[in-house]
Length: 211
Image 1 (cartoon, rainbow, N blue to C red):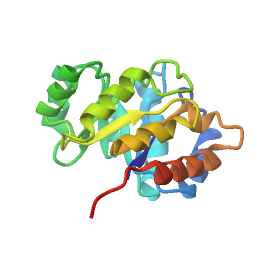
Image 2: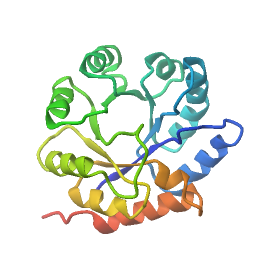
Image 3: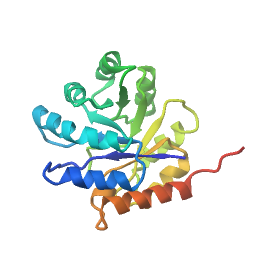
Image 4: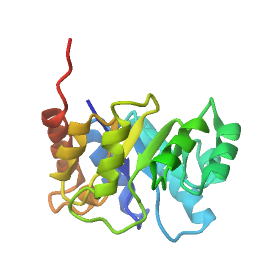
């Protein structure tokens, strides 16, 4: 059954967001938290990571920082998410593994995904986390998830859409992790309620296993 992989909002206000994150992570188990604010300096990213990392870790989530190895290291995060190509991925693998997790993103083709796996990424993520989200899973994300999940040993993360109903189709593929962003943070009921619903949808949509 898939686990939850939570991505932070694009904009983070440290005056209010840490408490919101703490409440969300207390609602249901989240396997991984990706700290990925947009348009911030390295110094600001490091500060955000230093505040959010212990919150995620306290709730049992593996905390990753997008694209900045120094911020990840200084914040004592569990790893880094690399979306800038296979060369940077290999550099991160050499620097971080086996002590920390190195994930690969921005994988647009099957070839990209296999290259990332060959470079020893700890997981591959399908879906463009920096792109505006649509309600449904992007067709390419679904296609790659359906191809990867039943065949490859390297874990797969697939990005759901902004509508929580999109969780169903991804969970049914058997992906290791369903990634959520806007569907959680824009839910009018609050992120805790959104994550609770997402966990329920995953459990109800998981493919049946043969004993």
